[in-house]
Amino acid sequence: MSDSLEILLTNDDGIDSTGIRALYEALSEHANVTVVAPANDHSACGRSISHEVDVSEHELGYAVYGTPADCVVAGLAELGPFPDLVVSGCNEGANLGEYVLGRSGTVSAAVEAAFFDVPAIATSMYVPVDETPLSEIEFTTDDFADATRVTSFLAEKAINAGVFDHAAYLNVNVPLADGDPAPVEITHPSKRYEMDAERNGDAVHLKDRVWESMDPDVIPDPNGTDRRAVAEGRISISPLTAPHSTNHHDTLEELAATYGETVGVTDR
Image 1 (tube, rainbow, N blue to C red):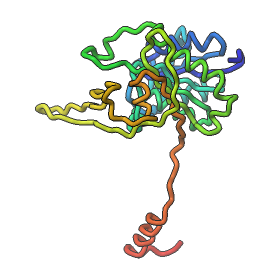
Image 2 (cartoon, rainbow, N blue to C red):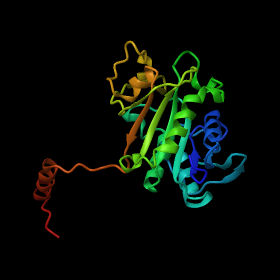
Image 3 (cartoon, helix red, strand yellow):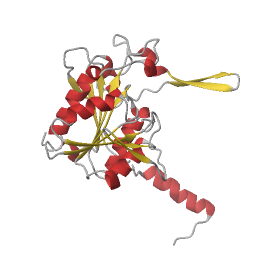
Image 4 (tube, helix red, strand yellow):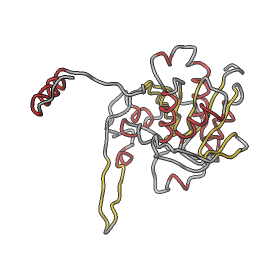
């Protein structure tokens, strides 16, 4: 990684999270890293944007009282040197599957960077679900060893290798470090979706049931998906695109013509 490489680092867990500290320390060894991250936890906020945000200086960089998307816009347009790469993470908890991409603040920061034509990496760490809520687990920087190792490698190699000629950003999910480096698999996001809801009096409890079947012996996600790779102990790298593409097809064209005939639209 060249010393001249400029990286903007953000996240959605907040600037004081262990995950962003771990990435900052690893990336700063060989690059100039500017941190612009939320002052508070903004998990699952998607690409929510604000009209105005307060900013304060922090030992790592800048704390923004807003969302990850706010941080990317503020960092790229005003607060930092324009970077070669945006890195978002490391998120405490995985971001797996198609349905998560628009919901995750971590991934959304990478998507925001893509609209600036800046390549990006979103890195998240899968933590097996048990009776302890994720918010109550105390992580150490050592837990993020696979995250820092693979993200540093990609930051060093991916741009010059031409990876971002074909992908706007990389969604990287890593297992919780267990000593030995985990292998890598290039994946696509799982299509599995098992959101559920249950009413309890005046409240409705929403539950993501995909996490209930992550046992690698029985996981239903097919080979090649991000969720199966991580459940089986591999690092998942999904090369993704943004902005969204449009699929033109004859059926919709015919339907649009029928609408015009139905309501009496005249040509303009």
